[in-house]
Length: 121
Image (cartoon, rainbow, N blue to C red; front, side, top):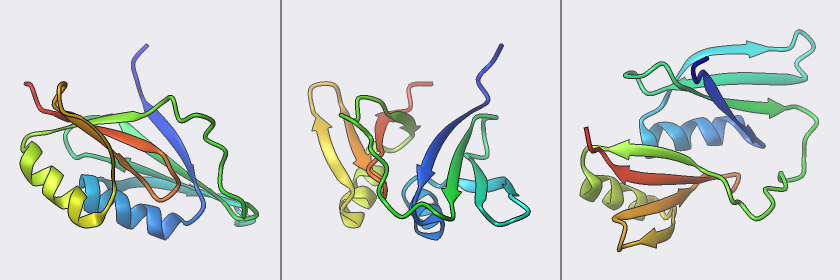
């Protein structure tokens, strides 16, 4: 078995798509929509790996999702931490930093945390 994708449910699909493109450079690679329009799935890719982030939008959902204590996250590695940090600070999405580990977290429009780590390839 190998990893395929991870899912985040979102309230505003267009806002989330704009966030993920600007903050992380992720772009739609495929999508599926229910015939009755009740849901839409958009899979985002990074252009380098086969891993995908699935954004699920449900037409009838109006309340924010309960993320519990948010003790889970998606991690993204970046080749230039300083440039990424500047962008994320400009966007106002940095929500936590661990200077001793050299990492920080950003928060998406629905409250999901994404860890930003230096690329160590």
